[in-house]
Image (cartoon, rainbow, N blue to C red; front, top):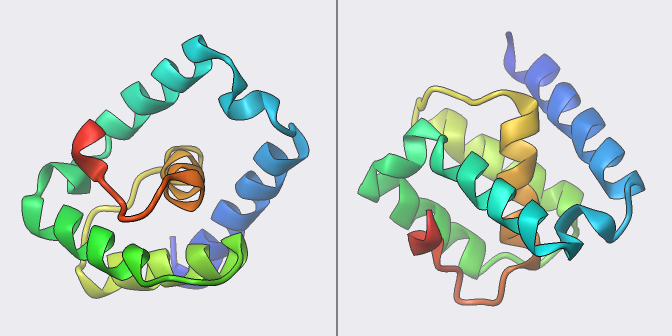
Length: 107
């Protein structure tokens, strides 16, 4: 999938999750499932990539759509294997709602 189609797919999936409202991260069982999903992201097993994401996202200020664009740009620049849109959206929501400084050690 080319970059533009991937971005569109991720943003469509993100919009669906946002339309679900607060319930997405509201129950403990769902949060555990989301963390389990993030642990499956192959590029987060690479300490260099994980640190690059933490550093880039710590200084981020903007809306969730800008965060999505910046994260995908970073991932493309690092030439990582991209996860499905559903999986990346879990990470995007975590990054957007997590306290700063961002700590991806949970995954």
